[in-house]
Image (tube, rainbow, N blue to C red; front, side, top):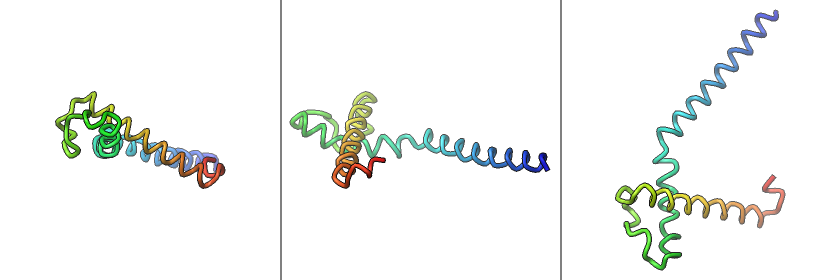
Length: 99
């Protein structure tokens, strides 16, 4: 009976491991689609607004023409903006929404 439970436990761990390995593979291979693009398209207008239209010099639809540093900075600004909006909405809905 213990062998059956041990085999079932190992099978469940293998399935969980396979799920997380697949998730990691998807995140690594779709970094551009999941993180860089949404961050660019949200962060670009914010950076333009804060720099009074000077930065980034690339157009809104041209993230590939920007340098890696510029892409990263604009994407980080975009994700900070998303975080601030989510926290603000959670605060407006009540503090229990953050728990």
